[in-house]
Length: 375
Image: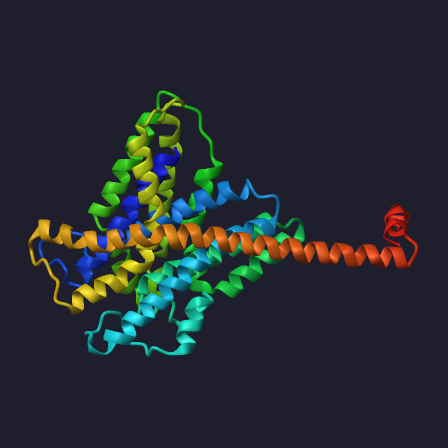
């Protein structure tokens, strides 16, 4: 199943890249998706994230280990992406046409808000220098909510959950069900039966139909028809239909998982390629926008030439493949080692202080031999 998730994650990253390249005019040929392709791909990312985080939490002994793992996974790539994005925008942003819903000033405050994942508090969750970072802010708060619920118990679990939702804000809260569908996909196990294949096919057809009939836009238009200010919801504008799409995707994973043979054999070359491609999907998602902006500013456009468009897209893909081993491999491992060593040193220091306190008060007779030996 892991290789399937890797392939899906890589395809979702490519879908986001293609959608944004079309959005910025790199390709101007026939295009049936408008902005729905990249948005639906982000929903796929949310579901995959829920699955992976749930599986990851089951391997960790406690909240500290879980937090360290997530912190080390996200922070290095995010910092490097922010520096790169800000540098690109600072150099050429002043001469670019409007490329976001709101023109924002490039200020230290905005950069810090993005780095701390609190951009939702002033509706700047999508920074002008890299709007796709909106989903990263959402995911961070999903992680916080998940950790608060999983690693607490009793009344504190309810209090922690409510507090997290209040701090996250209503825009992120109404998108939480889409992410929780991934948690459901990781938790729900079904047995194989004669109906499994038909349910799986029904899920696939439903997802295709959902996209073909543009359910997002129809529901969006219905809300606007009853004077609901959906535009104020920004990236949560499709929250209700997003939850439906996430549910269909989760069901596809749940029933598709049991259809895979237990002894599924994939050529090692294919497995290795899928692992590398999926391993760079996070980097591709983070850095593709600034790269496309540079190509847009340089006049690198394919027009209606599809082969030229695909050739142009190899530039951000190649860049992601190059930087991923550094910001998702070496940097993550070094930061994780540093954090773990710091935690261990702090824990050891506190243990020694407590031990000395017990010796001073005469409450720790087990250390008498060690103290005499030292003396």
